[in-house]
Amino acid sequence: MKQIRAIIADDEEALRHSLKRKLAALWPDMIICGEAGDGVAALKLAQTVVPDIAFLDIKMPGLSGIEVARGLPGACLPVFITAHDEFAVKAFEAGAIDYLLKPVIDSRLEKTVQRLKTRMADPSFPPHNIHEILDALALAARNTHEHLQWIKVQHKDSIRLLSVNEIYYFKAADKYTVVRTRDKEFLIKKTIKELAAELSPDQFWQIHRATLVNVATIDMVIRSLTGSHELRLKGLHETLAVSRSFSHMFKQM
Amino acid sequence: MYKGKIEQSLFTMHYTAVTKHTDSLSVKLSPAPWLICKFTFPKLLIFLVYTNVLAIVLYLSGFNKYVEFGKNLSDSIIFSNSVAISAFVCVYLSTNTFKSVQRVVQVLLILISLVFGAISGSIIVLIIRGTEHTLLLGGHNNLIIRAIVGNFIFGGVMIFFFASRARIDEAKRIVLEERMKLLDMKNLTIETELRLLQAQIEPHFLFNTLSNVMSLIDTNPDKAKKMMEYFSDFLRASLHIAREKTVTIAQEMELIRSYLDIHRVRMGNRLSYTIDIPESLLAYRIPPLLIQPLVENSLRHGLEPKIEGGEIAIKGEPEGSVFAITIADSGIGVSENTGGNGIGLENIRKRIQMFCNGDGDGRLILEKNKPSGVKAIIEIPYSL
Image (cartoon, chains in turn purple, orange):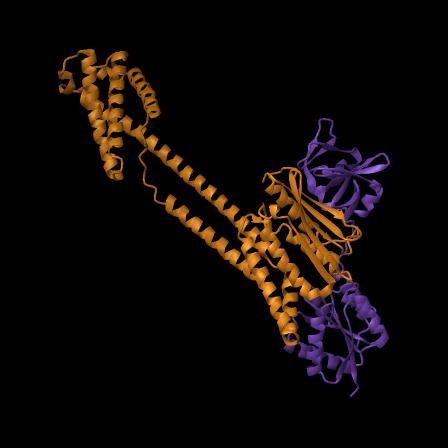
């Protein structure tokens, strides 16, 4: 039988050691030809040694295990090790890739070894759609949002980080844009137009050419006799004017 | 599983609370025999108005033509009032003298008082008007019989009216009381829920720790032992903290220390930390688990994703009327689209505001740390 070559990538040394020992006992034909402690090193290792199997921790510094898997050479099969069962379930549903849940239990590892053996004997492996599966997984694992989450503002000699959740509104003022939080105002250079494009449209509504308001901070909508709308915000004394072209948003509310 | 169990126990707790509540409600409301009201001075006034109206109505209806005394309006009014007042006084005295008697006895007492009131009222009329005492018992339509019949019919109606009003008021009071209790209970449930949530251990943290211990048991049992020690320290501290409304900064730091020690075993030399809180701040009280989530954020979003790791520095400083706790990491920092902790920060912010009763001096500030990473600053006024 052909010698199977594998690599292990995990940021915890103890886990790598223990997995290596367990695998040696369960699958003597397999040799571990390299270990890595972070994602970048793992990818480099995989590209140099070209293993048959890569045991990859999903949460690793540098690159995630899923990102490493996307860069694996040729027929190398990824097996994910993770404490995050939500990814594992997705990987399992995809049916192509195996996973190990932390803490790794001997009997479960044995099953994985069996599964790997059958899959390696099957010439249709890895499936042609493995990259699609990995792309879907990578998206799920990535901790970034489509929309803007943080606003960086200069305050005295430091840079404050404002979570968009704590911002009440953005309002254009000359060359700058005013960022209003519960107890302070800051100035940023981003324009209302740019912000409107980058912020989540479900969270921030444009109520005026010059104003974007955080919907969660609206206390009430006041309608004046002339039919124009004003917004009162929770815990703030000032009100925001809604221009006529945007007032349809508050009809029948 | 940990989470599931908590939810289950929370559910049972809530459920028993609700059933207990409905039981007590039905026990209090279901037996509703008529309840005698309390006879008080305002009631006497209502009584008198009613009596005089009755006297006038009787006079106008022409009924008084058939009686020997009280053919004119003034006699009729004097008669009604004296009988009504003395009846009320008798009822008042009897019900207030024998307070804790059975309801049947109370009804009997009232009936007897009405008879006594009728007799004494009639005698008073005789004294005032100076008429012959033969009218008292003699002839047809004698005063005492008229007074007794009048008292039983009209007085009875009035007492029944008061009694049913009292019953309605009592029922309303009970419902209100129960509603208050329910509100209290709801508050308590929410509070408990919050505390359990606070004490909840992040599942990934739990599994990562267990997995680390399991792999260390074979290769490095001493280190595994150490890890279990840190973990039990952490559990003990977090369980203790979860039961409190406020904790001292010292207690919170104890929890954070064990939390960071666990991570240090896992991350090795990729993590180092310092905690520097002056002695004078250690005894100040803050809401529990206010600082720990910030340390967790620093680890999760700052240091764990960074290949070379880094440092977490926790510092306490008095700053005029407030004291500041700073959690600074040298991690990868946040990019504009980094997600995942906005809600947690919002929660901390709300808890600081609640704790400071809306005092603007209590706040959470996030800054870019120099040269890299994030710095979170919590400011709490000294006066609290």
